[in-house]
Image (tube, rainbow, N blue to C red; front, side):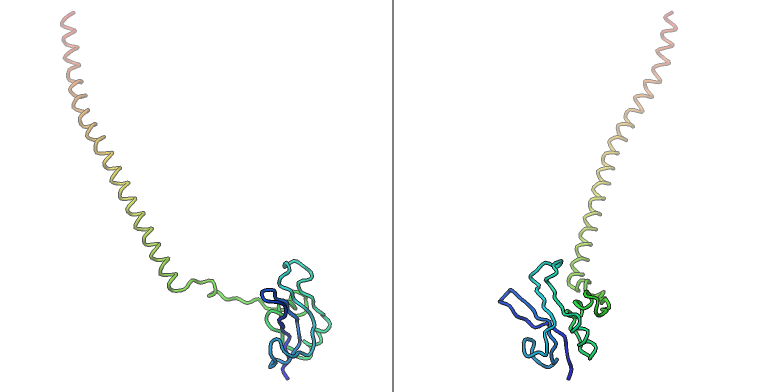
Length: 162
């Protein structure tokens, strides 16, 4: 007979309360069990001592005779220091699906296009601002040259006047 240590649900609708029981693995979840070795009340805070109550001696006994704990009960036993539980690693769990990946790629492409357009408008504005400045500088240069040419003539006229 395969023996399992698992949870048996009780309590009202949307107010769960579980018994930690040892039962034949082929029996129903809430059906007949061999022994109740603890309780679990998920409605209590996680740091509460009343959340999980476990008779450690009976749990050790049933594990020694070959009872297999369910995943949740295995977590309880690990927290109590009765049975080691290897950490599981599922790297694909947090990976987005194909549709989400496609949406992310489209969004990245739109952002890249917007940045390129922004850079192009900034460059156009910069070149437009530089062009009038260059034209103004080009207009000022002949005026300065003309003033420079007039200055020696003025000096010469002043010297003649002396």
